[in-house]
Amino acid sequence: MMSDPRHVYDLAEDISPSEISLDATTGFGTSTRSMRYDWPVSATLLDHRISRAIKLPNLQEIWVEFTFKTSPSFSLNAGNTAHSMAYKLLHVLVNVPGRFGLNFENNKTSCPNAEGPNDDYTNMYLSCSATGTMFDGAWHTIRYHARLGATDFHEFWQDGVYKGSRTGNTSASFMFDMRLGANMNQGPAQAQSNWWGKVIVYDKDPGW
Image (cartoon, rainbow, N blue to C red; front, top):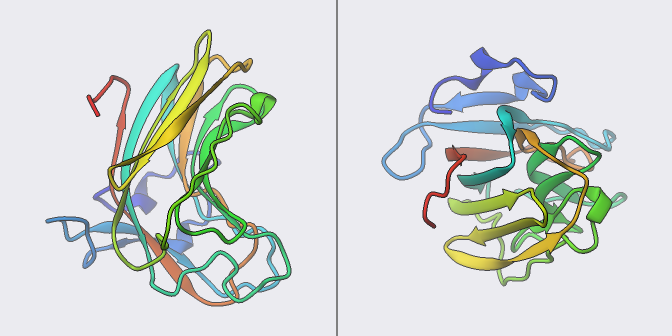
């Protein structure tokens, strides 16, 4: 992710490369680089997609750590309140309908909610609560862990704070790709951006 991401697109889930760029002046920590998504004004487009996909080697368990920030004026409705408001921050796709994921929903910006594959959506849904907003122009760190098996499981941390876990039973048997962003449920009525800094994907427990 520290080189130009537009040069390595190879999956159908890589959406809108013209709106993804290498930002050589903005980085997390000591880095001066990040990957930037530029959301254009698109008030009538109800499902605006910008996404970067990372192919996984059919895993049963994954740990993801990433840093993320938005422009200070970033919003889920971006001035357009006529439709549902959600941003799919991180999705891990599995081999049945549905996915694991972290989503900002219903104009709540303090922290994302976590969902499991949709054939056990209820048991694996984790509603997150916090004060303030993550859309404040500062870097934030998310850690996410998901596991398939006899009992499916996922959990996440936000800025070092453990947000909880959920268990359930689905028919999924492997995870095959991970998406950084997937879509915003409506096109922004104002231009805005978000940045991805450090992104690390583990297939073994990193010891969090």
